[in-house]
Picture 1 (cartoon, one colour):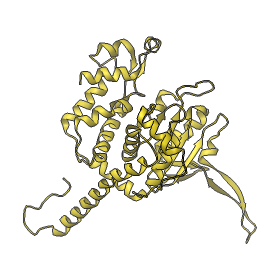
Picture 2 (cartoon, rainbow, N blue to C red; picture 1 turned 180 degrees about the vertical axis):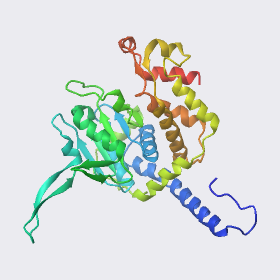
Picture 3 (tube, rainbow, N blue to C red; picture 1 turned 90 degrees about the vertical axis):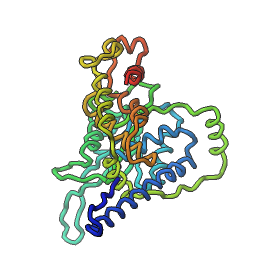
Picture 4 (cartoon, helix red, strand yellow; picture 1 turned 60 degrees about the horizontal axis):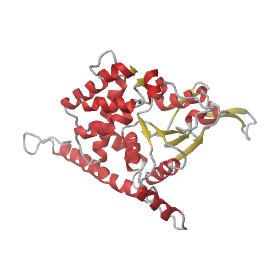
Amino acid sequence: MYARRSAVGGQNNTQNLETLTTTSHYRTLVAKLPLLKAEIAKVIVGQQEAIDEILIALLASGHCLLEGVPGLAKTLMVKTMSEALHMSFRRIQFTPDLMPGDIVGTEILEEDHETGKKFFKFNRGPLFANVVLADEINRTPPKTQAALLEAMQEKSVTYGGENYALPNPFLIIATQNPIEQAGTYPLPEAQLDRFLLYIKLGYPSEEEELDVLRTTTGISKPEIGRILSDSEIADLQKLTRQVHIADELLVRINNLVRSSRPETTQSEFVREWCDWGAGPRAGQALVLCAKARAVLHERFSVVPEDIRSLAYPVLRHRIAMNFRAEAEGITSDHAIMELLTGL
């Protein structure tokens, strides 16, 4: 897929050798992904779909919003993943009194002991890490939410006229509690759209929950091996964009996104229950995530199942239901189910 053979034997041998070396490098990295999932599974029981989707967001160079009730090991899952990836990890607990400077950083006044001159030095905040867990993002005011989302989009921070690049790779995983909504600041739709994936975390199965009780109430603590470095993840992110996707599948994605809009859809369900549908960014997200899922499954081309499995986390926060739908308990997941039926 990556190496094109020369039509004349012996020509461009050096170039072909470099290409083959690069291909071998990529294949070595891809082969480590199952090992990465195995390391995470040493600590996290079940939740394989959520783990896959977080890794897909990382490979696609995006960010994800993780929703689940308390006690589902969201923080432990993200921390374990960052340890296995050998990347820096910071957790920020979002509260109503949190200010932008608390996450981005602030300037402090220092003095040069040799000259006696005073100067301002930028003290970097917890946002300067490869993996940042923004815990309960909907509990902080819009000003702080906007500072975080700006950093997500630009992958840099501007303070005092200076631009500070954030680490590469850079992954934000924001969490929110779906139960308790008193005193929260729900993210506006335009800001939700900045998240590549909206992942919903469910309860474990009976067998998985029993396994959790067995493995987490003793004295043993599994050691997490470091499988991939930050530079190797950056290489995998480059590989993700090179994954092949057929024009037929691009047409399917385009039709799926456009059919979520009441003004362009042929779906009676969408026209009746949806206020507006997904924008072009949703199509871009679905293509990139499908490519990332192919890499995660050690393939170098996208298949229809990649699109179907990722339609929900990509589209659920980009389709707005009307008031009647909310009153009837009809969610965007129901709309996606209808659209996939006709795909």
